[in-house]
Structures are given as C-alpha cells and as structure tokens.
Amino acid sequence: MTTFELDILLHLLPAYVFVGGGYIARRCCRLPQHWVAKSLFYIFVPLVVFKGALFSNVWPFLLLAALSFSVSVLMVAAAGFIAKRFENLLAPGTLKCAFGYFNIGWFGIPIVHALYGDQGSIAMTALYIGGMLFGNTVGFVLVTTDGAEKAGRLRKLLHVPSLYCAALAFAAHGLGFRQALMESDALVSVLNGATLMTSVFGMALVGMSVSNIAAREVPWRQLSALLGTRMLCASLIVGALAVFLNVLSFFKPVELRVFLLMPLLPIAANILVFTSTRRNENEFVGVSLLASTMLSCALLVGWFMLSGKG
Image (cartoon, rainbow, N blue to C red):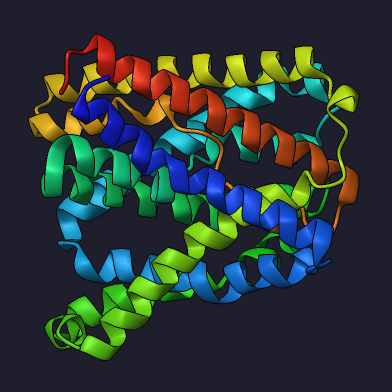
C-alpha cells in the first residue's frame, strides 16, 4: 500500500470511530437520540451552512452549489420511478431523500483535500453547500411531509434554520461585513467547532440508529439493490451533466474531477435527523447509511488505485 492510499484510509477512519462511539453511547449510556438529532438540525448544521456561504466567492460558489442541488433534484426524480419497488423498506419521501442527499461534508471534503489540495476543497465545499441546502429544504420536506398538502410542506420549509443562515451569509457579502466576520477569531473558532461537531454527531447518529438491530433481520438483498440502483442513477446523471457542461467550458479541470466523484459518495447521515421519530424506518436508514459508507470507502480506494494516484 502506498503512502497516498494510506492517507486516504486515515481520512476515512474517523467516520467509523464516530459510528462506534454513537453505538456505545446508545447501548451503554442510553443517550437520547433525539437530542443529538435536534442539536444537529438547529445548531451545528446551520452554522456549517453559514460558514460555507460566508467563506466562498459568491458567483463561482453559487454555480457549483446550484449544480449540486440540481443533481440531488434529478436523483429525486429518478427515485420516483423505482419507489414502489422498495415501498416495504422506506416511505417514498424518505427513499427520494436518500437518493438525492449525498454525504459530501465530512466524507468528501477531506478526501478531495488529500487528492487535490485547497482548490479541490473549495470546489467540494460549494457542492457540499448545494447538497446541504437540498437536504435541509427539499429533503427535509420529502421525509417529514409524505402525503401532506402543499401548504403544509411550505410551512415545514419555513422552519428550516439552515435556509436562514445561508441567506444571512449572503447578506453579509452584499452589505460588506464579510471580511470583518472572516477575520473574527472567535467566530471562526465557533464555525470550525460546528464543522467538527457535525461530523462527530452525524456519524454518531448512524451508530445510535443501528444499536438495536440484529444483522440477520436486515433484508440484505433488497438493501444491495437499493444502493446499487442509487449509484447507477447518480453515475448516469453526473456523467451526462459533466459531458454537457464540460463542452460549455463550465468547469475548471479540478472542478470536473471533483464533480465526477459525487456518485461514489454515501448517503448523508443527516437524513437520520429527519427520521429520528420513526423508530423502524430510522433503524433501516441507519443500516443503509452504514452499508453505503462502507461501500463508498471501498469504491474510492479502488478508484484512486486504478487512476494511478499516489
């Protein structure tokens, strides 16, 4: 194993440590799962969204964020065609959210930084914010309002803190406060701490959600079909967009390489925040996230080895 491949594995290792910590906290300490979920939804994730929007240049950032958001919306549309096949596993809204919500933050950004340095990290951060905005708006509404009227969905959307934090960051750009905020050591420390806690709590939720599940009770064949279908849809959508937009000279070279990694990313752990009140569904989502993360780890290492990096 090369030094590069070892570096990739070391970047992936903390995820499993956090999952294990969540499992132990739930099994041994009976830590309430909804506390962790609410702290993510109302505190840490909104701060991470604010940080990403504040520290990025507005227009290049918004274009990549919009692209990521669009991929997620197209994945939701694709999931609509196969939702009935998995209706015994997940509610249609939850399935669509799982299809469109990629774990770009704690998983994608460290890997891309190891591969492509700061330029890659900036591109992946923009994709992350687009995905985060999707998850905490469209994704949240899909999971929590299955069968609800449009007015009910809109009310849910108005209760999403991340949306207001993104708007606040962009307002700081427009009003000229951005530089002063970026130079505030206290604020930067708080935002960096929120980024860390989002990774820790997000993956801990995976461990907490599977703490009472017996492996023999998991429908592994259907789960494999679900994850395989998701990855195939993402590959087709991202591949088609990459070809089309590259012809239009939309991408810088590093941005294209980063964008092409999206299909290999797992389901975002934050979906557990939305399903935390539904025990049976939450448990299956947790198993899906863990399996998705393990699959992504294997595929990314294989991708880098085959591409001759290192």
